[in-house]
Image 1 (cartoon, rainbow, N blue to C red):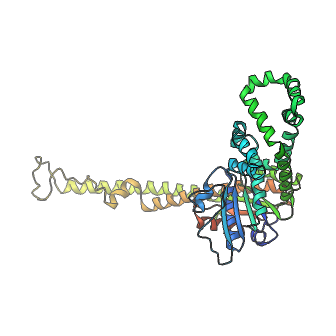
Image 2: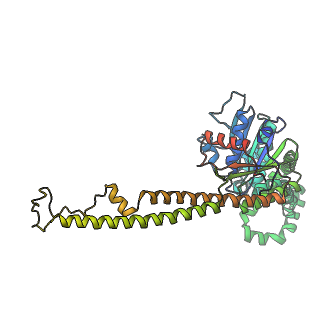
Image 3: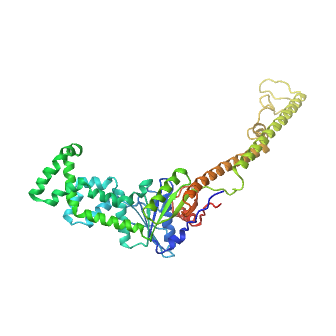
Length: 452
């Protein structure tokens, strides 16, 4: 028996004009990027003006949508059925370029140039811890402010870092309000001789240590960067807080994507609990790559028992066939003896069989002869029974996988029975084009959770 869960209805979610942002989160390797792309394709072909923003460093999204490149600029996806009036664009977050755009947009040209040329800023924007998540917040806010799309689908990074962008405003605030930053900003704010005096007194306690750890040049770069960014810090915090509130708004829907595996569903449970703690609107869980069978009434136990019975029958048939072959060979030997074939010199023909030489004996079996194959491989009945037994064992393995996935799913449902779910059956191959994404979209719309 399998536990029931509410059904996650994808099409009503995509069709609702009040749904403006869908955030797909989940651990790595569960098909999250493919799910986000399939949602975008399905939404566009149902009339929405959609854009898919991926933060995942993998570039499967571009390949599946037929794009030669995917960067910080939304690019329209060709091949979308626009009969319903929808369109689809796709982009991949470029962390450094987004940071550069923020600097240029929110500072005067001279200050922007000083920041962009600062070595510490170049390192920070290229891969400083937490920068990617904050820039994801910035890009999401930019897309929403442009109002060019009525649906934004966000594909987040894998693992628990997928929700790190929820912490971006808090971590940014802690960074800006930290003693180190305030101390570095103080000389610029005080100015003049007082600033120099403050710098000499306030920094003397830590300059020696910091210079050894960071180097004198890096410390100077950090001071210059903080002074140049001083006027922008408040804007960073304000925009991040605004985007955080946007994620909590009714027009946003979070979809947790998971595979029917223990570790993936454990991560999914973490996401569900975290979203509830942050008052984020959870739409439901997509259980991806679920296995099934067209002969579910045949259990693994029954299939294995039938396979063993067929293999035993095949062994019996082989024994009987081997006994019959031995009797046939004895009769043939007697017949040859009665024919009075005598040994002849090598190459000399038999007078009773002009075309026969001692080299062409009855024991030489033709590999292409079906009768010869039967003598070495068993009879046709045994081969058929062994083939059927092999197929039954494959079915038993599949049913064992199905049972294991159901048990794993039931454990999640028992803890979170209120979470709507949709099961997406596994495709036979990888998704690498629009037809594949449409197939995933169909499964998202038609999937049903396993009922009791």
